[in-house]
Figure (spheres, rainbow, N blue to C red):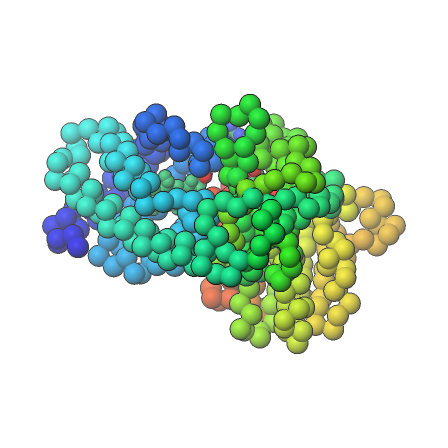
Length: 413
Ligand SMILES: Cc1cc2nc3c(=O)[nH]c(=O)nc-3n(C[C@H](O)[C@H](O)[C@H](O)COP(=O)(O)OP(=O)(O)OC[C@H]3O[C@@H](n4cnc5c(N)ncnc54)[C@H](O)[C@@H]3O)c2cc1C
Ligand code: HEM
């Protein structure tokens, strides 16, 4: 435990570090990857090029530092990050590397203002924060490997089937190469896929939500091809679409994540998705149908039009059930969509529509989609008086805030 003086120093210097946030994180990654290029096998290079993710790790260290005398208070956030770390294979020996380079970066940027006393206090604070992560993650590693069909690290899976779901989304049905038991998962969880591409110096790891319900002898992921914008095409999604064939092997880590449907509760549940954000929602929908046939579920999916609308068959197969209500929004329907009545509402999901069409007071809400979609849904729900504990969401990119001012954002969904 830090002494009172060190705690005061750490807390009083957090705002200074936050003020120099970008300079420190930029320097931190420069120094760390310079000395440990092997970490480029773990970190997402595209995220590195976009400041949103650059800030996430260091900002979380500062945020934790504000609770250095009561880390218990931020346990839910530590758990959420720990799930991502476990899925990526972050190990205790990585922590001192991050700590050393973060402190070096702080010293570099702040210069003489970072006195020995300040650096010493920060060194100790980082030690405590990293211990909290390490011990939680140890439990998570243990859980992942000791469960029935579980495993440690990355396991080889055969691509049993590759199915085109829309013009941009393709599903991959993955079965363990060793043909042994396959760990179950909770609806909403994701796996990490590690790919080694010919001619690429580093491996690339990405998360993909499991898009089918648990209890099958395969995992299904449904991947959107990230291409066609002014930005470089996405590395892993295009590789999966273009190069990976049925019969190929993918390396996969055990299911992770705490964005999961609570199947103990029996409240009405509203699942909202935009674009490829429907993958965890389809898993949740199918799970309600399988294990809570009495529970009312509203599945709301927003897409551009029928050309990019994926997993429609999965939803149509259950939408006639008494407890299921499915609503499709298209913002740019094609003529064919109109002729074939492929959608229910033209436009976006609005607050007014939600107010009139879903049991706002009683329901639990789960949503995922592009960040602007998520911000709009979150804002609408808050305005309608939906309580914090009824709202659950997942980012298909680095964790972000849904509360900040609306701004143009790069989205990966
Ligand atoms: C929990 C979780 C679950 C997810 N589930 C799914 C899922 O079910 N299905 C799915 O399709 N995706 C899912 N994702 C997203 C997925 O992990 C990948 O982020 C996505 O496939 C893109 O990866 P990529 O390698 O193709 O793109 P990357 O190479 O990582 O690029 C990401 C984006 O950054 C842009 N970019 C690249 N370089 C630059 C640059 N220099 N400057 C600016 N922009 C740049 C690219 O154009 C692209 O849009 C999930 C993510 C998370 C965190
Ligand atoms: C106390 C120390 C740490 C804190 C507070 C921290 C915090 C975070 C946060 C907030 C995220 C984003 C989570 C998300 O978007 O879902 C993240 C992701 C990540 N962290 Fe950590 N982290 C720490 C240590 C480490 C270490 C030691 C490593 C390995 C060297 C590491 C590697 C990663 C990677 C690879 C990601 C995924 C993002 C990407 O690929 O760019 N972290 N961490």
